[in-house]
Length: 161
Image 1 (spheres, rainbow, N blue to C red):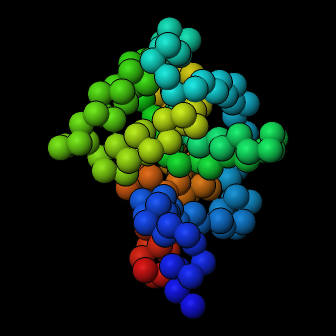
Image 2: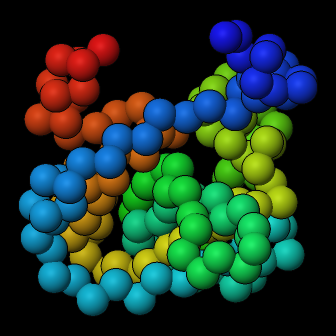
């Protein structure tokens, strides 16, 4: 049986496939006890003024909003900024239009899912903590649009490629 036999228009699936690593051991190993105050904002220009001006950690999630399912999100990317989260948020609008030099996974994410994309962020004052938290989140979630992961995750991922 071929994909063409299962789907009326298989070409529509092209570019919508992501590999998610669901690794319970990594979730259990997450040991930071920071009480994050996550804010979630639709990734839309009119949200810029609502984004904190503090440094911090952020992520992009896709929320399909199907059947009002309460907990359906796809965590696609985790990042950090030592500058204002608001500026980082704003930067992504430019990167999304930079088809020449923008990061391909990010450009694709920002353009294909713009109606479903959310920017989650948490202000964190201590720069050292930002780096530690980003590393821990990357190890726990292994988001598909990130290109750089902590060394121990990279080694494990290479073993299965």
